[in-house]
Image (cartoon, rainbow, N blue to C red):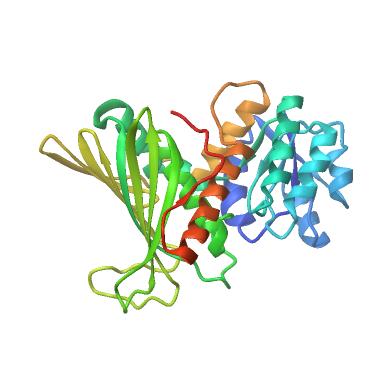
Length: 332
């Protein structure tokens, strides 16, 4: 049985993480909980027959814990990771780490030297539709060559979004990571130009990828929150839609659990509402790594890669020409 500590509960604790931890209860025991709101920590601890702890440092030093989950966006996650590094505790990280690449990179190298898993929550990688897309790429469609995406930025006042998708910067960093996850090779440059539509203000962003001298690309139409609804394109704040062109066919993802594809004249649609949630899959993969499993997961270097694309995107918005992406070393 793995014993886990929780740092910060966050606004989606009840709806997102409790069900996933309940489903994993045969192999994971929540043993200690810290939250800035003491009453909330005590209520959660009572639910899981755990101990409410009064500080992050005290929780990280507990010898009975095998791993920690940082679930509260309101907690500054980089200091928490430093505590956990010192205590040699693996960590699952929901929410933002900020954009301090040198600090994130330093902690990443320290975690590697200690053999620690520090897994950020890139939820888009693990939605049922994305998991199915990866299966289709591996078995029928061949490698992805081009991504077309329509995305509308989230409302800044909402607190019930998936962690890491609740504000402009983290939303886009998660979106850029998804493109890195699907397309082969490394991102080379970003070109950001204003959309021509006056009804839908925003940007058209092209990210070019290079893999073994072959190019791939992602083109993202990123609409502002203020965009006006339209009969042809109805996107609520925070919505994302993908069209993925592969060697042998095309895939469309309308939501986290709906997918359709065309291949060799065959058309098919699937609704995957009965599949495991992204939160369950991510936590399951994390805990497998904690006990020595080799299942691949995201790490802090993935955050640095996505932040670098975001910085190139921001730079291109200013100069309106292609800006190189620094530090991209991924190859797949």
